[in-house]
Image 1 (spheres, rainbow, N blue to C red):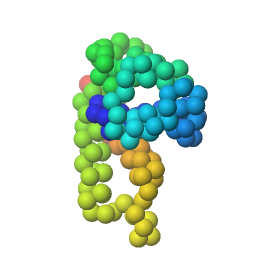
Image 2 (cartoon, helix red, strand yellow; image 1 turned 90 degrees about the horizontal axis):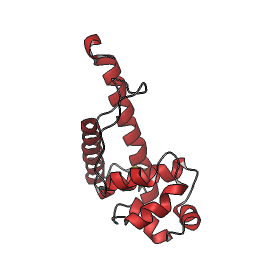
Image 3 (cartoon, rainbow, N blue to C red; image 1 turned 180 degrees about the horizontal axis):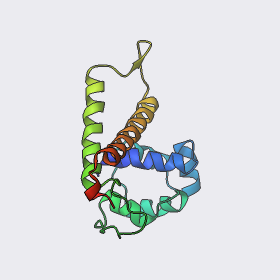
Length: 155
């Protein structure tokens, strides 16, 4: 995962954890607001110490998950379980979604399509748009796997 992708991922985690602002999370975790801002904007490689400080304040993730996403730990093979479905996204799917997202956002930026009533979107709105677009790509990929996977390959 590159820094920009990690920033989008981290921003989603913050929002899902109930922190409406970067400053709110910074105050709770003891990590500076500027560090949280640089993480989310994809301009800062997070230190393991900061990941460990932030992890307890984020839902559904622990420090090891964040360390893996940032590349500090090797990815472990997922353990097959009853929750594993044929339509779950694979590492290749995640990589493809990341490439598609990057390409789409670059196209929108270059064509000045990110505007509302002729006014360019602010950075926060662009970030929220990117998160929404990524979620849409994920959902579309899962739905197409459900619809088009032949029966012989289903669990």
